[in-house]
Image 1 (cartoon, one colour):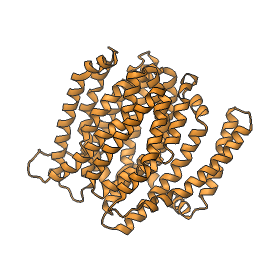
Image 2: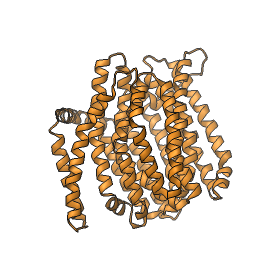
Image 3: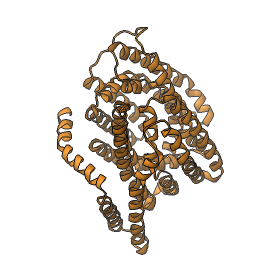
Image 4: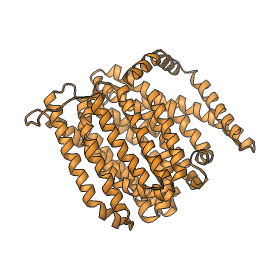
Length: 472
């Protein structure tokens, strides 16, 4: 979490600088290419890294076989993206996308070499090492992107930053995990792991349309400027949420997998997980919804004010989404990869349908339709994902009540202060944030679980910081 805080600060600083050096059209062009690149990238892993993490016992021969399979898949995907670059440029009617897509195809060849190395680091819970890799690779990304933007390279600055991340991450991964793969062999017992990975890849395939269908439709039927506003609003909103959710989920997968045959400990761990997730993300989303205009203006600049409405709608949509997303962790850790795939198919159909309904109303309509779809599917999805697992829907909902009530009360008090005064100065907004945090924090510390979690964090922080310094 400490490392994620550092990454968040870097990401926020980079966003503020690049948003002032580049235009919505630059981000929109890269957003068009990113849709295709991300689509291909979800096949690169093939779910094999998660299979390495989830499997109770694994041999050197099995990991070596998975390594060479990942390399073969990555090279093939890179070549497919390279060959298909003219088609993407034709589809959008933007000839410059040919060279951009071809350049980004190189990232597949680079990053495909470290999939199993990073899986080994996760399996052995070396999260401090992974954090160092991510932080330094992102710093390199920012340096390259900002320098190119200052030199007037426009959207090529974002391309250069992406390639810099892939190269630096690969070199650092090899440095911290000098594992050398053996030969690819048959009969090593990876068939079950391939099936598990296949289900996860199938989910990622259909989930791609749920996550990127809105960008595809907006880019095609509304335009690059609208896509730039929509994508930047989504990125800005997800930035703090990801910093909370990502480390918790990375740690939860190996731990929950190890507890799958111990239902009592499994329930206790999962309950604490959703309690922490909800307690951190619910106030974040409420604050973003209330202060959307101020956050966009101060972080991105006035040229991005068109993203305010989308930013606010997405905040409302994601009020409990980070907590609800932990339902997937239950399915994966319990070994129900097939049900994980089936749920992904249904969710993708629902999401794309909502995008189509909202498209005639512009980017605000797309965001609103997506928000409605998320709440429609909430309760049925929980029953489906928790079926035949130690977790129950009632346990999940009970964990949400306290942080939701505390967040709503804090938001109500803060809104009275915000709209009760006509001040729009920086000091007024800082005071507003202080009141919101103070009320929510005070209410939260009345709960025993929060006091226990805070005590554990304070007790373990000096040890974790010492390890991080040693790794760095």
